[in-house]
Image 1 (cartoon, protein in one colour):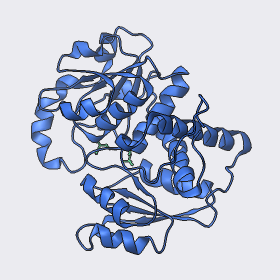
Image 2 (cartoon, rainbow, N blue to C red):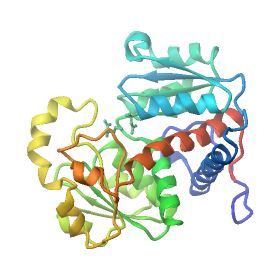
Image 3 (tube, rainbow, N blue to C red):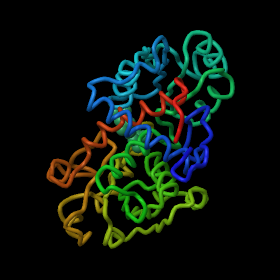
Image 4 (cartoon, rainbow, N blue to C red):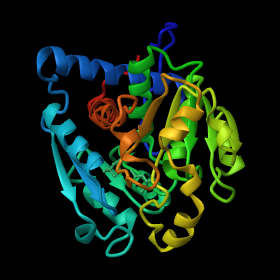
Length: 315
Ligand code: CP
Ligand code: NVA
């Protein structure tokens, strides 16, 4: 049941926020807060996933996603297996349908970080256990869930906030943020150079109140400034072109002042390329909430795990 007393249907997988209704998204946010409160007040979580195992397949490096999923499983009484890029060779040594069917006989859930989004879809189609997208080239739904949790804690509400996303507006983090914003009634101002703005069809699919501009005035009046790396994992051969294009979009003290909001907060999914998309002075300032965001990955993902693997209801 949600706040209005309507029942909220469950999710089978967590691949992309396009598959998640606003009620389901709010249900996950509330469950994440409950998980966090439980850990903070009681020092532990109920062992909802006792005896359960999560396979974690990585095609790309990770700090936050890997450690927060592993600790999340531990806090819930379960176990996580880290499978490195060299071990599995997802889509290379072995097809995703075969990997999915094999792992489904061993574990209770699969989390995968991949290049092609299609791979997480194939794991979900062919396996018989829930699949979680731990970042694909298309989207990063776990990050956006943690980000909305962080903003909800910071502002006490999400509806009516304005988030200005500055930098590569066409990447996975930007897309998931737009999708999340559409579910909670948050406005998004994408401030990105031509060629790095989101696909209009993707923007349309999000139901979010979005403006897209290449003009830095787009940050004026925002409550939150968000940025991410200019060169995402897998885009390394575009490095020279991207470094030539993005410097005007650096989140620095001058851009903070340009928001005309003294209380502006700054977010970054991390890892940061300090000195490129964000300066040390901003990342380490009192306005930065980047580490709260990173820490909330743990609590947000525990909600996803408890729901998908442990049957915790969304309410
Ligand atoms: N933000 C995030 O997903 O970090 P990692 O790449 O370290 O997992
Ligand atoms: N856009 C970045 C996010 C890293 C968490 C990337 O895909 O590399």
